[in-house]
Length: 405
Length: 97
Image (cartoon, rainbow over all chains, first blue to last red; front, side):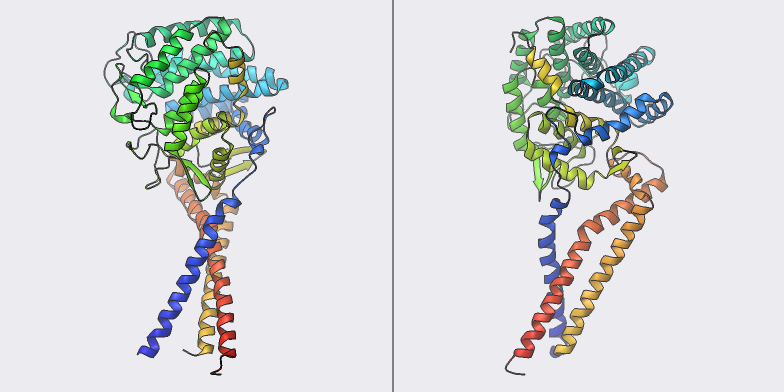
């Protein structure tokens, strides 16, 4: 019996050893097959080849009224916030693309106008609730009267500002100023200088977008809200910062009390907030980026990702975080927004690792000269496109900055 | 087990590993050629029909098997082949023979 058993165990051990050895040889090498030169994605002065391909699909939608109607309806059915945010990020992308390639400016302005007009018309016809999740209309009272969402006002103001920075349009100038005036008034009514996105629910994501739109208005209209912006940063340091990580928290009431759905820092908020704060207070933004990088960025065998929450401050999954990978805490939504921050802060190492993950798990699909990421969604494509082309618009704002700088 | 049996076992494992690799690769190439990749949006939670969700999941599974398992099986097959040859060479040069 012994003579029969020993060779069998030996055979199993040899095969198991071969498989284990093969595993340790292959797994650390996998990322090399998905790593790509980031110059395909980022370019200092032009529009990178991948950005052009990724823009193709979005341009097609906005050039073709029938296709646009179908696609917007699809997105609205899936998630009204996605419908709205994909417009914002695409307008920001077009503004950057127009500055990068002046030959594209007229067409970019035409499409930006089309997106902005369609958005304003929808808002006028259906009200702000059209772009908000269903719970906005049944989750209690708005604290600041009259009810308005800074998610909507901030992003519309940002779109108007971006368009005006590429080429002034008088019709938009008055609309932009009205939005900014309303934003400033509402933010000023809160002890933490933040306005609601949903009833008694303020998001750092939306409020930092609003700050960026105020800054754009300062540059365009020669106003000076630098004292307001500096005061906002001081308030955020004191009242909206997680003590353990030093990062801005995600969600809170109008009086600054953290809310259950985002009581700590979140990848889906902080990466974009850092980028928006770059034109408000560069040092503060860089400090937030460094902290976010330390707390949220991950690297698994050459594949980069972002956690949704720091290890010390775990939250629970929701529609924003999407599915979170157990143990790693990686979130596709947070990783998507991490592209924006990595590109904005010129963190080529992290950006390159994120691209490696995108090439492996994003299921890129090239069709008719256009690029799609099948594992993403329309907002994901717009966010990625923005991360590939961002830079010139923020430089324009910083270069023309007011006394605050 | 004698030397011939040992060598036969090793060869059998190598063939089995290569067989698995060929099967996974062929499956992946087939679902890729059939365009199942276009249904992978299911993994981001975008609502799709049951059929599209099924095709997308089939693609995702064969894709990760292709990039994760096939190279491991092939490397393991190569290791077993080398090990088998070294073992056979050592046996043939052993003073007992």
